[in-house]
Image 1 (cartoon, rainbow, N blue to C red):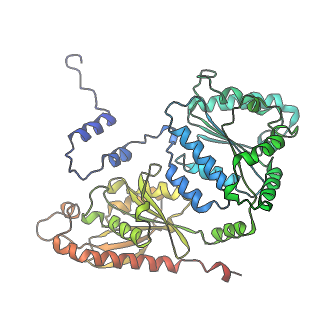
Image 2: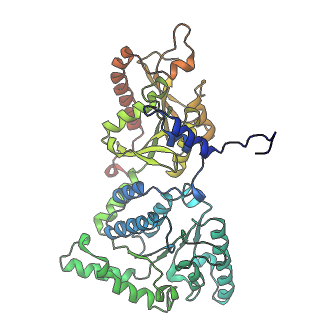
Image 3: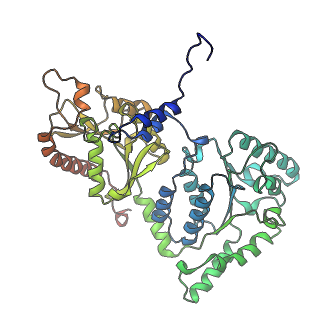
Length: 466
């Protein structure tokens, strides 16, 4: 450093490393939470949550064992390799209504922070984007430039090509250079990109093979990819009307995973309908300072832990980097619940709450905030619909991030400090031994109050609907 020069600022990354090195082993703070709170350190908004995707597929995708198997296998192999030799290329095949679009949307939702709304996720439909056969050469050039430009902007981009059975033959081959194992194309490193092709082609053949296997008393759980691949290949890759007809993508074996969607039986369809009827979602967020367990200010998180135990999902907490929070999914009174503990400081909790709301398509009116309340005596629990933050930094953060005060609030009384104790030191200190003795009953009361309020919002049973 030149004499008299000002010292260079310490980068935030370095600062966090220094903090980690200086932290005592017994320190309560989770430094990952600090990093997550300070840094938007996801490449192009890419924050894969494979555990969440696997859980969602197992819970909400019915009758498609091969889909779960192929999608998870493909993503794991691709994402566990820090330097993949080529992009991940998947091709979804099956009849209308079997879940192809549903799965592709779910997959993107668990990979990118804003799901399909991410600027790094690009969707193409031949009917919308390439409608005129006489303009195919123009479309080829436009498509090549579009993919090249977006991969230059973000090598982690995802490209979804819908209705490949309606794509003009020959058009898709223009992207072959981006799908292979070359290191760089047109000056762009593209090997971390994801391409998904979606097609109804092969659906009839998949249905025929599935029916034949059913007649042979082979359960759908026993159907293998090898049972279906010949039929899919003939219907998709040898069909002059298919976008893959005589395609170099096929000849050069650039598709990594063919994903067949089986026809759904009556009870599968019924299960889907019932799921849609009752799958109204709510977010329940326990506010606090992540890592400062047992303090008065983080009592909202203790309520969430108690709620998770009561709903039998205490072992399901997982880190969701997309919203920088611990998340567990549960069901209560026919409603899907997103349980959330932000991995941030209290005054930044709203960023996690709002991110989760966007991920799960929830509005402010679908959110419960569970937090401490100085103005209520210890042991007092109350539900409040909307209103101001009344000086609570966590609630104020949520109001600011959601641009609304319509959230339902479950307030847990902690009382005010006595004597010369400041409010800040009081709320950041642990409950006393005497208070801790009462706390278990208070937490149980809070969970009961919360579940009763959720029950009042529950839908009627599907069989009772008109």
